Each structure stands twice: as C-alpha cells, then as structure tokens.
Amino acid sequence: MTEAVRCYDCGESYAFGDRTRCACGEPLWFDVDPTGFGWDRVRDAGGVWRYAELLPVEPADGRGLGVASGRTPLVRTPALDEYAGCRLSVKDEGENPTGSFKDRGSAVGVAAAAARGRPVVGTVSHGNMAMSMSAHAASQGLECVVLVPERIPEGRLEFIAQYDPTLLRIAGDYGQLYYDTLELAAEVGITFVNSDTPLRVAGQKTVAFELCEQFEPGVPDAIVAPVSSGGHASAIWKGLRELRDAGAIDELPRLYFVQSANCDPIATAYRTGADDVSSVSPGETVAFSIANGAPPSGNRALAAARATGGAVLSVPDDELLEATRRLAADAGLCVEPSSATTLAGVRRLAADGHVSPEESVVAVATGTGFKEGTAGTEVSSRLVDLEALPEALASVGGAE
Ligand SMILES: *Cc1c(COP(=O)(O)O)cnc(C)c1O
Ligand SMILES: [Zn+2]
Image (cartoon, rainbow, N blue to C red; front, side):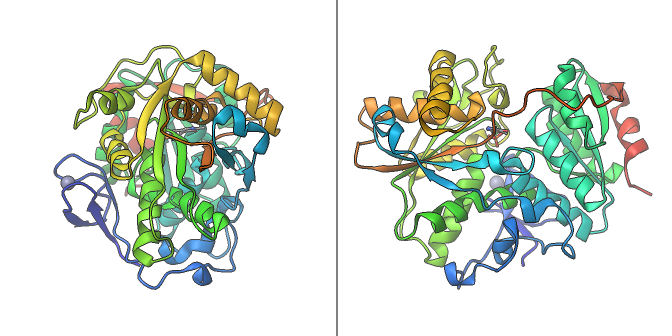
C-alpha cells in the first residue's frame, strides 16, 4: 500500500510522514490505486479490515476494536418514504462500538500509529471522536490524549473518561487547536487523528464501500449525510471515487450534505456560490456533533457536493428534532439529532424537486441517540493554558 498523500484540489503529492495538509492549505488524503479491486476481493475479515486492500495499514495481529467497527446494517425504511419523499434506506452507524462512524477512522488511525511504533495517539474533540479515539487506543494498548474545551458538561466527560485517556481541558481558542496539534505532533511524539486527517479519512471511507456493496446491484441515486468538519463527507467522496476507478461502480451517487441552520458555513458557501467556505461563529443547536464553525475540510465537502451534482443545505432545529422523533417512531432507529438532519434535509430536497419519489436515497445516520447516563466514572483532568500546550503535550507524549 502506498504511503503517498495527495491534495484533492491542486493534485500535489507528498510522502505521508506526518503531513496532513497541502502547501496550498487544503487537506490531503491517501493516494490509493484501486486497480483490480472488486467485491470478490473483499476480505474474509472483521469490521473495516474487510477492505484492508484499500487501506494504508494492515490490522495489528488481531488486536483492537477495528474488527467491531463498520459492517453496520443498511436498513430499508419504507414507513418513512412518504415523509422523506423518496425510497429511503438508513445506514445505521450508531451500531459501531462507541456509537458513531468515528470508529472507522479511529480503527485505522490507531492501527497505523501502532504499526509505526508510536505509543501515543491524540485528538481534539469533546464528543464522539474523543470517545472513539480513547476506546480504540485502549483496545490496542496505546496511550491517548484528548483535548477538550475548558467548559464541558460533566456527563459528557464521563463518557470519554471511562476509556481512561489523558484529558486536557484547554483554556483558550479551542478552534485553533486543530492546527496547533497537527503542527506539534512530530515534536511531541503524538499521532493526532483529528477530524479530517488522512488516516481518519482512510478509515471512514469504508462506509461508502459498505453501502455500495450492500446496495448491489446498482448504486443509490443519492447519499445524504450530516456535515461538520467535512471529514466524513470527504471520506464518502473518496470511497466512491476509488470504487469508480476500480470499476466496481459505474457512476457516483449525488452527495447531499446537511447542516444545522444555526451553524451552516458550508451550506452558506454552497448557497452563495462561493469557492471557499468562510468561518462563522456557531449558534446554539441541538445538533451538537455538527457545530464546527470553521470546518477544516469545508472546501473539500463543498467540492464533493458540486462534483457529484448534489448540494449542501441546512435545516432548522425544530425540523431536525421532528425528524429525530420520526426515525424512532417510524423506523425504530434512535439517532442523535445531528444524524436526523439527513431525514429533515432529504424531505426539503424532495419538496423542492431535487429528489423524486421513485429515487433511492441512503441517509447515513452517523451516531446513536443512546448516550444518556453513565456508569459514574471518576473524571480526572487538568486545566492547561494555551501557552503551556507544547509542554503539557510533551509531558504525555512519546517523544524521546
Ligand atoms: C463527527 C460527527 C458528524 C460530523 O462529521 P464531520 O466529519 O466532522 O463532518 C456527524 N454526526 C455525528 C454523530 C458525528 O459524531
Ligand atoms: Zn493542494
């Protein structure tokens, strides 16, 4: 498997090392040659490792939660067809070990760190990615450092803390941490697997492989997913491109991405025809998992929607809450409000004539709604001033 990473935008290629972004500023992804790949080449392996042929790392001697990540069901939900305005299926990513698609990227990111002899991984998250990285690190015997904001609900912190990572509560500009950590990674000896880094995207693209394999023969007319940092959206696009290049599918489904109207920088760029996504300061939304006002892969998500004839749109909180209730009541699926943006979004797309009743659409339900209450974990964390970040990271890092 290649170690080269390439810019989706300008085409520049680099040796991976720890490089995550192109000199042009855009994010990089692994350069994969999928020639010869087909459904007959899917491995008889657990979880995401079924597609190891197209991944940048092999599973580490059977260890780790990778075998439990992915292989999620594609559920046809006819009772929602009328509401959605199309033939709807739901890819239930809530079935992953920590309840979201993030486990796909964490599996590959943590396995890659282990394979390269890196004992410490890290991430910047106070939600699903934090839980996922901590769990995967635990499962492969690696240390994990998680950077959370200074103020975070205690209940949420307990969910992360149960996997026993090092928790750093950061005082200062939390948005800047995405870049600071990637810059410091090599120096402090921590493999940061942030929202849209090449390793994360490599793992997360397996959702596209799976849903196409499950949809066989043919592909859905469209795929709808929530978007925040743009890592997941980029991964779906990447996976579909690889399948097309391999000849496993003939054409790409249209990609639609949905945001909350209270934090919709990518939808705004789409609506206004802008080339680049501009940051916004996020408002309050029940869709807390998709509230990134400065998405590092915003431009890449925008490119994915435009290149496939899709769109990026946003929906108000009352609509996505209604969609959350519908998914439970009419399909038996308990999802995060963030995930229900897909149903609310496709309903709008159908009402506006972008999706028609006979079309087949897959909504990616990115995360489970079952995250109430905890086992009373004791939380230990310390407060770190942003200026003191290099030192704090170095003290937990694996650098000699
Ligand atoms: C992280 C997350 C998203 C957004 O994914 P991005 O890669 O940041 O765009 C959507 N839904 C859920 C449940 C998530 O955890
Ligand atoms: Zn570039």
